[in-house]
Image 1: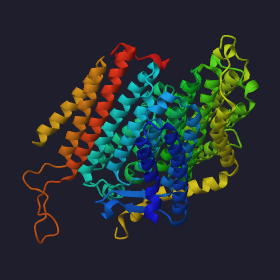
Image 2 (image 1 turned 120 degrees about the vertical axis):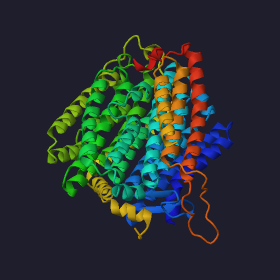
Image 3 (image 1 turned 180 degrees about the vertical axis):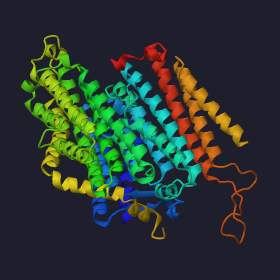
Image 4 (image 1 turned 30 degrees about the vertical axis):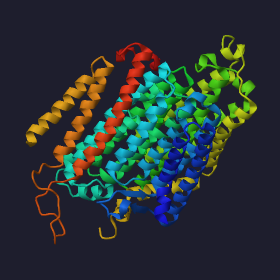
Length: 511
Length: 115
């Protein structure tokens, strides 16, 4: 039974892709299958989470070959949380796509691609094998390449070239690092790697390989100074695609960083985690400064992704540096809580930006306006995630930032805490900029929307607002129920830091 | 043999990086290809070079008689080559389309999405 629950989040998107591809010309069928598939994926992920929460880490060995020989699929609480988040973001984006993606893209496999992307993301979260992780990354990247370029508009093509190139470089580095790791240890299973690297007599080489992984995942997670592809590409595809990318793709990089640097590379924390901590501070700062300088809705949001990644890696860096286990758990829980908050809020903000762009006919903030007057509900639904992103109480972002800053203070990293607070302030500044430009000021005369008003039917509008409303509701709920959510994050962090449980679950009791 | 392969791998990385830094999209693709070949050869080399000993378990034994060649690196490389091939095909198509649409193969002209 456990095996089935573990494999369902992979089988459902795979089946959805296959069914949609079989009905290539029958778009209505593809839409229905994508919607049912996304609902089923969310259901399966919740089932997995509930299972992992009640019985602990669950493991299955593909083909029944014992670890470390077979390929392991494993879900601990952290993986399960990530799969649930992927399910939520996936469902919301699919619903949003039903009313916003144009016929041309739908006819060229938009829905199967979205599901293939979800397949890759879930696979990356659930695998326990480092080479398998590479393969899932490629599944995810390949679908994201096509989704990004689909449509072939000029900015899209330019953005795709940068995105494709840098991600391929990252994959080559990842692959080389996997190869060296195999040469060092003779294993690819992550739990087995954790055991064998602990016994390794060449610690310097191990740290060097760790740095290769840091670069490879750092590119995918858009960590300073490897983030340039992100603001160059994320604003070019259609809104739901950028929402899906913004919510999930960089977070897979962060997930891989957290997994590798809590499970496998923990031999030289004083070096690796100090580096991660320094990179976090710089990532926050450069991201938010980039955002302040931007004048386009989605580009502002793209730069904010980068600055938020800094917060997520901050908890990881702190967890590796502090002496006390309790504080390390608290810091890492802060990171996990931040990821939970961020995926929902960021996906939502990109969806809002798409609706705003459709209503105003333009994407530049200067030429948008008047949305508070014409769409008060949308304005309110923007305000919830925007204020949450900036860290206003009582929304989810406040508790996420609070826990990280408290952990930073307890770890006596005052410079980093000051950076984090300053970045929060600038985030608030650029959110209010969007608010006053797109929502508050009157619609400029020269805007195309003032000449010919947008033709969004009320039914279309309802479908567009439904996922936005649901995710805003979720943001508020996480804010008001921060305690239970945080306790789940604490448990996940505890499991991550006490590696023995994970290793024993994968390798069997014999170890 | 090990030294030779190490040098070849290094040369592939160097050549790949150099090609990627040239001002041409086509050379960028060549650079990516060389880089992935470098990674594959690296896996092959660090996986250990053992000649003439197939990892076959003799009758009546439980494990192959030592020394034996490790088959795993080859399986990894095979997977990586297949993935690399698919990605290369996509990249070629994308870059060709970009060249047609944008009328330039100079990466310095790709500033539209950065403004």
